[in-house]
Length: 343
Image 1: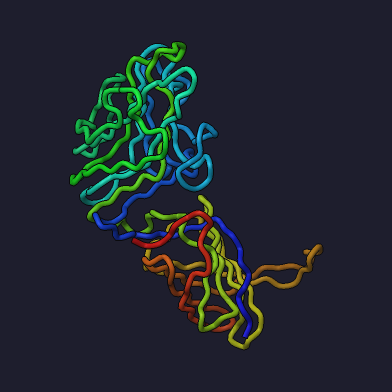
Image 2: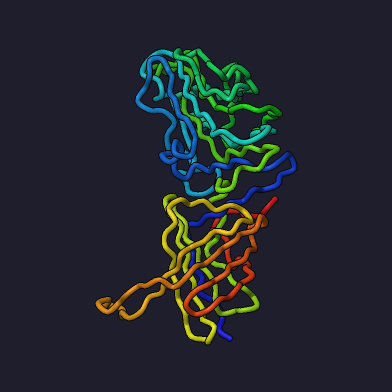
């Protein structure tokens, strides 16, 4: 019996509707790519006065992220304002289905240096109308009339945490959430000013309703290598990027001959939990290392892949030129530094 021992580290994806103690996890954002947020339903709007050179931006070497790569967090700073004035920089979360039960996230600021501390403030606001209007002035709140809470509401010294700290807010309402970096009395040129630099990481929203099929809530949790212990010696490698999913099959056909397949790239990147997803598969022939002149790729059939809510099991059905086979899948490996245990 051949052993499936090709351990490959991958970028990965999985839709996991995690059942939490307080509800169903409808949104989880780790901020691996801040530039991709608008396409995922986030709204970033800097309404500072006077407006500065930055808005919310990708984390940098000011400090490392709470989890993941060092820069995988979202940040805001005193550069959001263009001179003496008020920072009002909005980060509006995507719409989520059903009743929003709670919100949690990690945040921190910098450790004060020789020039002292420049206090920061972060508001958590709620729009009960689901509207996303934030007004026009730096002090406006628009549709976000409900203040769920604030970190350092009075802009005091030594209040905003200087190490990653988790905050939790109870909502129990249907509407839209927003995080607002809101700092008054800011003067970027002064040593006696409010406003410095904050980071946000691992934003999680729990609701009473699962997201609709196709909503990706844990794209980091398809872990690449899957196999069926009953047919040890073959398996799947699922590779994910923000723009596509590709699946490789390494194994054998029904006659015991080696069979390697590659899927078409699915650019919709939807992967509903416990719902079959079809991948057209192709098989290659000819070609040598260093000489691909005789290489060709032709259609083979279909791989239907289902991933379960536990994030560690699923089913793959191969149907093609060499017959049909079903694999009851188990994951071989996790993405490094990512905890994908279902809760």
